[in-house]
Length: 210
Image 1: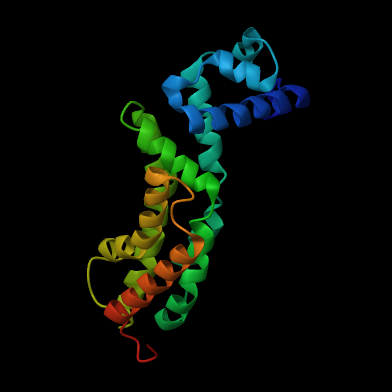
Image 2: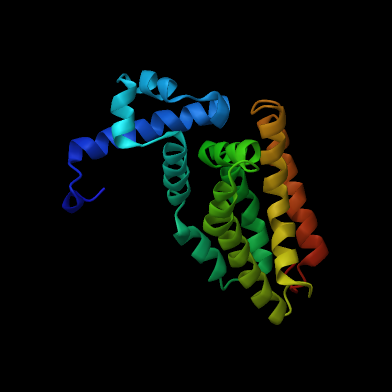
């Protein structure tokens, strides 16, 4: 927060503390199940003090989602779009990156909240799609479209190809959200990711190196 706008460091620190506590509550209890009393208790202040920072629960929820979404660095996405190496090389290293991705609890929690609250909170769906989903799919589509032009990936709609490449990570994340984070052992996750991308590479990568 900008001190020039009248926000002191102490006030900014308090607001961040409220956001952190509220995020955990929204993940664990959902929007309907979380009250401003809950947030105040988690922070250790009175409810009126929370209201001084956030005028109501929806305002707080929107601030939480904006903060969490903005935490995801667009640089990594741009690196995907700008990748110039071969598809054969890329598909040898993708599984390692995806194994890290699916273990990002912050991302999984965001998708969990999106699934539970998205229908009642259209802004949440719009925010996620614009800030993350469409940006990341667009980066993959750009990368794969360029690979198709070089003859290194089977020709199709690049956005379809992007969704094919996103599918293994989405599968794991949704399964863990629906059935619990510990229901899919790490060794199964790793083996699935390895085999899924090996299968995609065999089916679609057309470089002579593959």
